Image 1 (cartoon, one colour):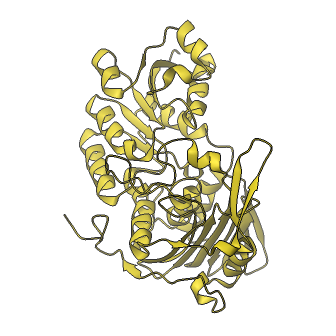
Image 2 (cartoon, one colour):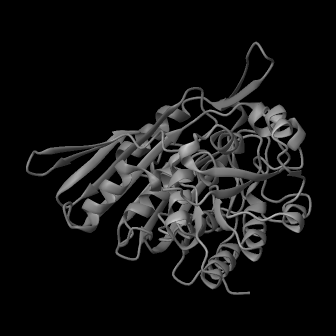
Image 3 (cartoon, helix red, strand yellow):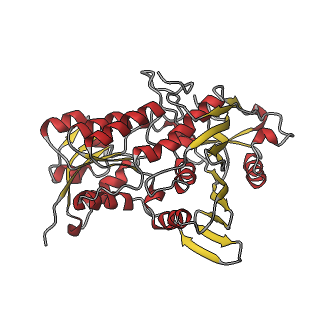
Length: 406
């Protein structure tokens, strides 16, 4: 039986968005999808430009221009952080479902705007935290919801991923607090490259498939070695409204990649791993959930099938993704003045491509120690550069910065 073909507009086709573009262009006939158009200010620089031209796929520099002449069942948005909500709103206003890349946005007030628009539209709006769409995470979350692990006690994750100078120079917003127009971006390790792993701790504690934990407070320590507006290194502690402690350690100013390393402790067992998920229960039994990596294209096809079937099943709605946005906003309020690492600890390496890596001596080992002990850097007691941030209440946090309603 012939199925309904789903039309897709790909918004942002360079960088990360190239993966979505390739998935649609190279889709097998049984996927029953078609590329209705591409949108990118630099669409002519796409590595698939010849395919786009040969197939006569409409190309535009902005989404509004696309909708003036075309329609699409689904808008797949892979644009810069500050464009996620405006473009999602445009797509909804023109009758499209939305799959928007992580993070949801920069501020909690933007998140609330999109969540409300999604509710009113009756369209599917999914945020692309691929771990949330993966079988291992769904299986783990289902077991948590069904009580297999008992009550959660504490969750922690360590992700140390170096980023070279080219990473910060690849666009005009990497590492930025705001863009040139004054719009919040809040780009950082915990709101971009490693955002998945912060979000996952919040996500698996949500009581429903499409829900996340409710946060009560957050305290953060934010540092930088690179010459950027925002931070490249962070450690934070937050608590849910149930009193569960969540710790997260993330840095780009380190020499080698480590993690994600995770340790989720519950009454009846502990989930641990380095990118994978294995549970060891208090009775000695072990359950392996597998590796949630490799589901990047899964979120696309699951969204397509959800639209086609009319179920509009969602693993990560704007409300669910908002937990990570709220945590980020509170963290930035916790330490509004980023602490610079001492110059004598900073090393700059240059590779054969004349690309620099700025890293902090001993930071990786120190963060591993903090992770093992479950402490923030300032709690170590023997690190002169470490500084404690303020504890920020998130119970009625409505608008960044400051938390109050505006």
